[in-house]
Structures are given as structure tokens and as C-alpha cells.
Amino acid sequence: MDFRDTPDEAAFRAEVRAWLAEHLIGEFAALGGRGGPADEHGFDLRVEWEKLLGTDRWLGLSWPEEYGGRDASFAEQIIFSEEYAKADAPARVSFFGEGLFAPTLLAYGTDEQKRRFLPKIQSVEELWCQGYSEPNAGSDLANVATKAVLDGDQWVVNGQKVWTTLAHRAQWCFCVTRTDPASHGHHGLSYLLIPMDQPGVEVRPLKQMTGTAEFNEVFFSDARTDKANVLGEVSDGWKVAMATLGFERGTAFLSQQLGFQRELQDLIEVAQKRGATAHPVIRQELADSYIGVQIMKYSGMRMLTGLVKKGVLGPESSIGKLYWSNWHRTLGERAMHVLGADASIIADPIADPIADPIAEVTDGAESNYVLGELHRIFMFSRSETIYAGSSEIQRNIIGERVLGLPREPR
Image 1 (tube, one colour):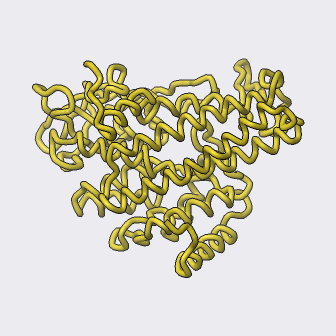
Image 2 (cartoon, helix red, strand yellow; image 1 turned 60 degrees about the vertical axis):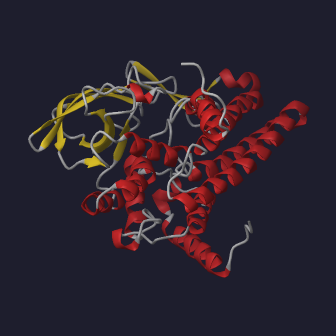
Image 3 (cartoon, helix red, strand yellow; image 1 turned 180 degrees about the vertical axis):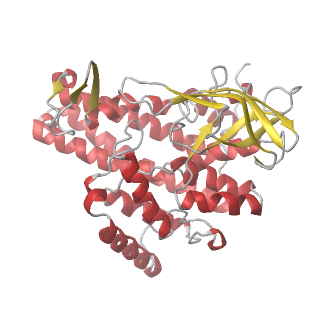
């Protein structure tokens, strides 16, 4: 593969850079790439930024033009992601809508569903969350117990989801539910689209050691959604759900992975300022992380090649997810090595959030800790080896479905 831009791609890259230079100013520029996992900083402002992206069709870049997109090639999508990360633009708030639900909708939805939901995603009028995990159905997703029963022209949903990221911000949830009461395993499941703003939906935040609560429990108590709000066929939603996981484990995290390069560069600069690069072990660790992020980049491009050929990603997407999540967790550990004993120190609230570990902010009688970037990476990256399928599950998928090895004893 030739990674150099063609003349058309170079022109597109120049267009992206010019647009970002013109619009990423003022309050938007001041966000400095903030936001994302474990950091809801400037969320409302990031929504306004996202609306700008949607207005000029950078949100929905890959969608067909008939649905409001640019029908961008995969090379153009990579270019946009690269330039977006280089510009230190704000973390995206529409990850679940644009990154996961929209490609699944384009693959399995009806024309009516596409015309109903895609414009609202692009205008950022509707944000989405993912209703997969349950207390007894995490990595074993086929054990889903949340049920939906058809009542006239509506589905009535009862059950519980957990670890539902940004459910407190979302207007809609794409939710795996059991619609065949006699079924078990991955049979009899449906991919329902459920409105969050209704009396039958309760969202409870789960506060983490990072001090944030972007994960939630969601309780459905006779919640309702229209009969037509099923993606794919009724009781045949497993393949639709797996397609979404393919996008999540493969291409949806491309921009995030490009952002990892910036995080590594920030860590290298901190190490240089603190004199930590004089330590041969730390120097070797940073070099190893640099090599790893390059491997991650080309592995992501390989995933895109597979998507071009098949339209959806297969089990090989687990390779990318396993690699990047473990790389990022290791980066967090190496960040603590760079900080040394200072890793346990609470820093001054006005201190540099990169160079200093933690800033403490007191609100009345309750103390909340605002993490510096290095601590945030260390703490939150550990969850990345669990969500979207744990590393153990990814290894099973790679072994059994990619390499063709015997199945693990059940």
C-alpha cells in the first residue's frame, strides 16, 4: 500500500486543514482536545462544536450523499481523522451515534429508518447510547435478559442495562433485547431503538475512581418504543449487534487511536522536563510505546481495507481492539513510572494538568478530584480492556474464529 496522498487526497487534506484553521478558534480551540472517556469537560460547548461539524457535513463524512453525507472514501476518512487529531480538536460527543449506530443503520436499516435518524445525528439533535451489557450479560452478551413484548403498535421493554456510557446525555438507546421468551443464547434477540426521554426509563450514574460518572445503570420499567423501531429482523438481532461491535472494535476508535500519538508525545515531553529520559528503562519503555502506536496505526488501516472489501468487519476486528486497549493501559502504567513518587501527590488546582498529577477541588462538604491527564490515562485505560468485549473474550474470538483453533471448553 502506498501511504502517500494522491493529488485528490492532498487537496482534500488541504480542505480539512483550512476548515479546522477557520473554525477551531476561540472557545473551541481553548478546549484543547479535552473530553472523551472519563472527561465530560465542556460537554455543552463540544455539542456546539459538533453542530458546526454537522452543518458542513464533516459529521457523517462517510455517509452516502442522499443521506446528507459526503460519500467520502476510506482514505479521506483517515485523512480527516489524522488532521482532526493533529489540530487538537475537541473529543467527539456523537461517538455512539455517528461511530457505532449510523454505520449499523446504513448496513441494516430501512430507507425510512435512515431518513428518520441520520439527519438528527448529523444535526446533533439526538445523541445515542449503547444498551448491551447487563449485570449477568457482560462479555457473555448472549445471556441478555432484558425483554420486550409487542403490545399493539409498540414494544414494552423491561430489564436492566449497566455500564451504559453517556446514557444521562442520550435521547436514544440502541438496545439488545430478548423478544422471543422461549429463546436462549443469541437466538430470539432483537436490536431495538428506544427513546430515553420517557417515564419508563431510569438512569443512575456510577461514580468511578476517576471522580466522573459517564457510565450508568439504566432501568426499563414498561418503557415503550414503536413497533417499527427494530433494526434488522425481529428476533434476529444478533448479527446486527455483532456488526455494531465490529465497528466499535475496529474503525470507530480510529480517531481515538490517532489521539494516542498526541498523548505519547505529551508524556515524552513530561519525561524530558523531569529528566526521566535519562533512566534507561523509562527511555526504552517510551521507545516501545512509540513503536506500538505505529503498529496500531497500520493495523487500523488494515481494518479499513477489510471494511472496503466486505462492507462490515468480521471477527478480525478483535485483533485491533485487543492491541490498542492493552497498549493504552501500558501507556498509563508507564506514565506513572515517569512521575515516580509524584504519582501519588495531589497537585495545586491551578497547576499544569499534564505535568502535575491531580488537582483537588472542594465543593461544599464533598471533595471531588479533577485528574491530571496522566492519571486519567492510567485509571481509565484499565476499563478499555473490559468494555466492547474484554481482552479474554477478544483472545477467544481471535483463536476460534480467526485462527480456527478448537473452541474453549464450555
